[in-house]
Length: 164
Image (tube, rainbow, N blue to C red; front, side, top):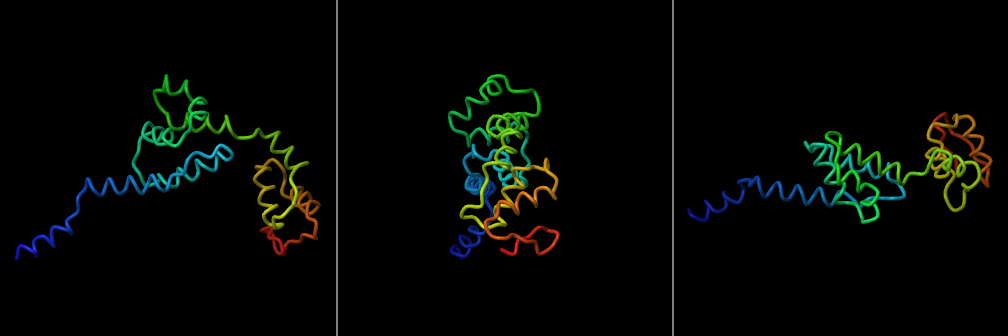
């Protein structure tokens, strides 16, 4: 009978243990900060923390934990004098501003530096769309894309999928 009691105790949930496991699981889902793609890192971070009921300050602390020294130096003034509200969004805006290429630099890459190389035409198109950031009309983007392809690039439908 004592054995049965121990077995049933094993199935009783322990909130502290569950919280610890959830914290470990979350830390595994959040990757270190990506300097080369800060906006995309924040999309990933927000997806991982979406179900949590965290305050702006708690989210900011979670972001800081993923930063390296040079990243922290970019936000040091916000750490020494944190804003009264919107701490997470302040950090997010600052890090994106510090590391993301300017619109003019992205357009320069789009116009002169991007090439098909080893990627598939659809990958090139996706990269061009990312660089264009809705600043270049779709029709012009398609023309630029077709010129960049070393083999003829055609569309299957209006969703701009390549046959290649």
